[in-house]
Image (cartoon, rainbow, N blue to C red; front, side):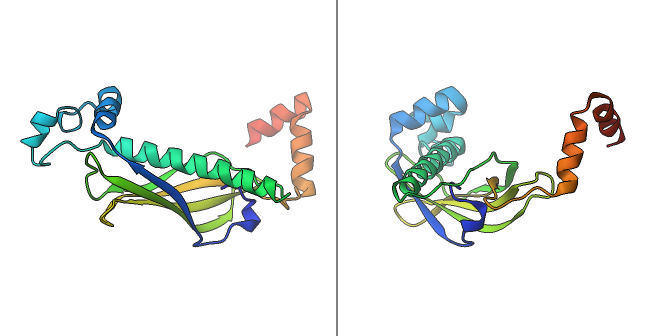
Length: 185
């Protein structure tokens, strides 16, 4: 999230936009990254239990991830335009759950949304918090095609490092003490 950890509201929905999946795009992506016959061969796929060509789940995920990154960038620009300082997003330590509910077919328009479902200060990285997010995607018929529970880091704006931790970090920079401290951990 491109807001400071303290400014993030639980259960606020962030629309990420829509994407229409074209047959040639589905085949191109799958040919590079997931070349299973039901993603790359319309004729074979027509005779499969899928009843036709379907997009790779990873294609659906990749488009959604791109939409999310673009939305974060737009939020940063929006905040700067208001004269505010945007927050700092960090990496993701992982995905807790992911499911593909309905196949995405050529011509389907998929709409993505991100919701922060929870947050807490990080236990391992001072000055950062963890955001628990759900990204979901529905097709033009309102059918859920994809959902994932993601975790991401967000910097705390008002973090002040405790004196004990500052001292410990300073001591690790002293060559002999740093080696002793690191061995004891």
